[in-house]
Length: 347
Image (cartoon, rainbow, N blue to C red; front, side, top):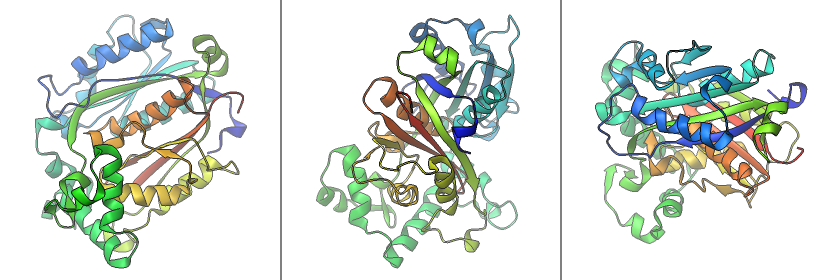
């Protein structure tokens, strides 16, 4: 929804652990999250009790245990009691709930966090559980094979080329397009550089109402629009080279504002998916896409989308950008998509 009819709310803080290929910590995320929380307290000059609402995003399937998010609350502390909620989604969706909580006037400061330990199992296989439970999941399709089918559909239709895909990776790796195209396929037509490596990580973002945001930081990253939409999980019922839900979410989040933003942080675990999302967002030519490196530097399951919002907001908080858009996705092949627009100054 457009933020024009809602109270002004801003991102005021962002912290994340390193995107590690594998970590020695437990699957409950406590070891990842405590340093994130401590950094936010220090950066904002607040304490645990200044947070009016907490919301987390994680997955019991990834953790391999039921109600894994309950154990993660150890990173917050049990006393005094907290106002807390959870979503079985990427932390970006937890942040949306926190945004709504502030918009209702119930709280002034909220912290959303996401965490996941992808190295605890075979994440390509685990993600098969997101597919249709009757027609697809019983086949146990691995995530990169499904992405390969999507990439092939785009290549065959002329929506993009392998060089276009390599150009996305080149921005992150520093290698030339020619060097990347010389590499072997790992899931035809995907090469290793087309696939984001899984990572273990946690991340946290703090939102605040207008009055509190102005007290906490000099240049809040104001939320100007926020929406998320869902496409059918039936692969045969949608054009995999497009993302209607991203387009709809962007139309609502941007409203009548310019899409020629300074920064766009796109959640794309595969190079061709960045091409799809960038097209649906309708970005301007000057927009810097994924200055953080994006998901291609580490597909930290259940915090990577939250990181995109955090990084986009950080560009504004640090004075490097005036306008930004962040995108998060969930489900197989861009099934669910969220778009958040942000602005600094008095926008």
